[in-house]
Amino acid sequence: MNNFPTIGILGGGQLAQMLALDGYPLGFRFVFFDPTADACAGLVGELMVADYDNEIALEEFAKKCDYVTYDFENIPVSTAEFVAKRSQIFPHPKVLEIAQDRLTEKLLFQGLDIPVGEFYAVESYSELVFAAKSIENDGFLKTRRLGYDGKGQYRITQQTDLKELWKRIDGGSFILEKGIDFQREISVIVTRNSQGECYFYPMCENKHKNGILTTTLVPAKVSKASEKAYAYAKEIANKLSYVGVLVVEMFETQQGLLINEIAPRVHNSGHWSIEGAVTSQFENHLRAGLELEIGDTSMSQGFSAMVNWIGEIPNVALHTKEKGIHWHIYGKEDRPGRKVGHSTVVADNAQELHTKVVKLAKLLGSNIK
Image: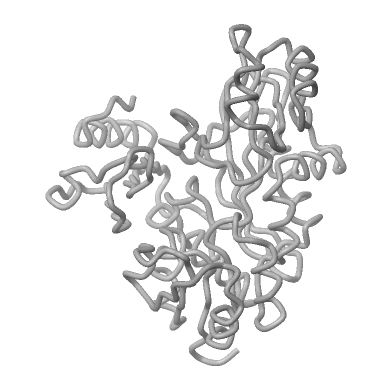
C-alpha cells in the first residue's frame, strides 16, 4: 500500500461522507461515485456523477482508486463486479447479492441454523392469501429488494383487503414476515479483517418510528441472549468471508433471539462510535479493507447514544453547544422521512446519559424519554 491510497466509494450519501471524514486524518484520499449531482459526500471530496451502469465512467473511477467500498447495499451487483475486476473491493460483491434480497438473506440464516421469524415468499395473489392465512393475518409484506427505512413495506392485519393491496402494489417479488412480539431490537457491529479476526463494538439497543431508526443506546443492557448475539454475528461474518464492518440486526423475544437482517457496510446504529468509541466504525471499516491493524472498539466513555434528525435540520444545531452533545449535519436538503443529520451523546454513567438525552430531546423539540 502506498503512503496515500485513494479509496473509491460507490454511493455518495452520508455514510460515504463520514467514511471520508474519518479517513482523511489517516492520509487517505477519496473519490465518490453517485448518479446524483447533489450527493452530500461531494461536500468533502471528489464526486463523479454518472449512472451505475455507465461503464466508461466506472472505468475512469476504478483507475483513480486503490481500494473501493460501498455507501449502501443496494449498489447494483453488476456495478460492483465490474469495478472488482479493476480495483480491490470490499466487502466482496457476493455479499451484496445476498443482502439485497430479503429471501436469500433469510435462507442464509436458516442454512447456518440461526433462528429467524416465520416467513413466506410471495410472487402471486394466491401465494399472498396462503401466506397471510398461515401467519393469521399478522405480519409485514416487504419487497424482496430495495426496501429500507420502512419503504416497500405493508402492514398485514385482519382488516387488510389483500386483493386491493395486491392490485395497488401491482405484483412483484415479496416476502411476508410474521409479526414478532419482541422486547427490543439490538444490533451487533463487527469488524472482520481478511485474516478472519473479528472485533466487536458494544451491543446497541435501537428504537424505531415508522420503520426508521430514531435512537440508539449503547451499551445495551446485558441479557441471557447477549452472548449468542455476538456468536451469531461472528458466524455470519465468517460464512460470508466478510471484510469490513458488518451489522447484524436482531429481535430479542421471550423465546430468544431472532435475526432480522444484515447491513454489509457501516450502519446508522453505529454513528455513536464517532465520539463514543476509541475508534469509530468508519475508521475500522477502512482499516479492515486496507489490511491495517483494527482500532480499539471499546467505548471512549461509559455510555453513548445517537439520535437521528428525520426530515429537517433542527435550528439549535448550529447555535447550541452542550458538553457531551455533538451535532452532525450531512448537507442534505430537508425532506419528510429523510435522514438529514444526527446527534451523538457521551456520558460517564447511565443516569448522566439519560439526563443528557432528555435535554437533547427538549432542544430538538421531541419527546424522547
